[in-house]
Amino acid sequence: MILVIFVIFGISIIMIFPAISEAQSEQKTFVTHSGAVVKTSGEVLDPLYTVSSVEFDPDEYLRNFEYGRLSVSETGQTIRDYTIIAEDDKIQEISPGIFYNVWTFNGTVPGPTIRATEGDLVRVHFINNGSKEHTIHFHGIHPAGMDGVFEPVGGNGGQFIYEFEAGPVGVHPYHCHVMPLEEHIVHGLYGVFIVDPKEKRSPADEMVMVLNGLDTDFDTENNFYAVNTIPFYYQHHPIQINTNELIRVYVVNMVEFDPINNLHLHGNLYKYYPTGTDLVPSFYTDMITLSQTERGIMEFEYEYPGKYLFHAHKVEFSEKGWVGIFLVKDNPDKNSQKVEYGT
Ligand SMILES: [Cu+2]
Image (cartoon, rainbow, N blue to C red; front, top):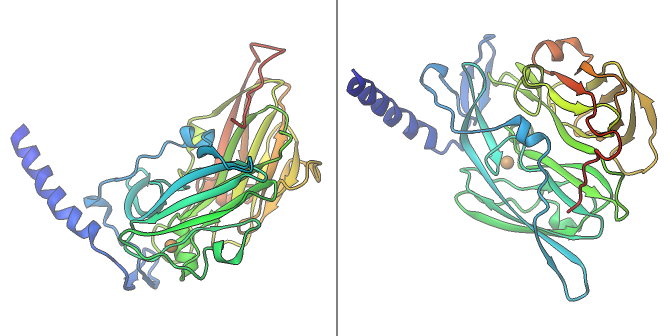
């Protein structure tokens, strides 16, 4: 019996992987679940015969910051080297039984959260192991040749080094900028770039939330919405925080197709710094509205322990996955609970 299972599994793997690895540079016509006829160069998947080739842990992603490989120039400038590899053939089970062809930076959607201090020299060694052309376009200030728009990097090992001074202070998205742009973004080629001020922000429990949508049937409407890619994840796995501790959330809206998104916090209000460029908050609110690639920094503390929702107040989005819970626990240490950052 076990032998039979292995043989069947082996045959199905052989049948699946040639299809997955085939380059798909040409658009294919495809009838969606809703009956619309669309064209896509993404993988059209049959969930019954698909396996997931992505391992992504939203808990790990939430508080993971990549500071790069550090060195110092002759003039004393801090240099941070990062390597980002693009691929476009990965398969992720984004909801039970729903498989989606994700295009990834370093194997996940979103890609790694890159972090530097204002004025550091950022060097991103980009390798395109995909089948299509890709780039990295950073939001922020840099020379034209480093903008990741007019220098498409060919697939199957093409390389480019993006080099610029980190700035301005704040939270910025990065994403592929190859046409058709919408397709390259919705498949997942994006991530977050944080530029810290030279005089650090106050210590806090820091986390990154990327708001994203998933158009799993390619009809240019999102079927799922999420914080950090997996619908409903933080509802089933609440984010644990402490009372009387500063929480700082770097939030970036990467939802395509829908013109706006928003973020409502329960039982509290937050200070909001649009784009994080100013060190003085612009709003004290429990609701912000975000268009494509709009982003900012939220800061808040909870006084009372318990469970608190955070979600899109666009109810359609929250009912399709964009909802989470903060589980606030009594702070075990009233004096020294702050988390340091910026190493
Ligand atoms: Cu691309």
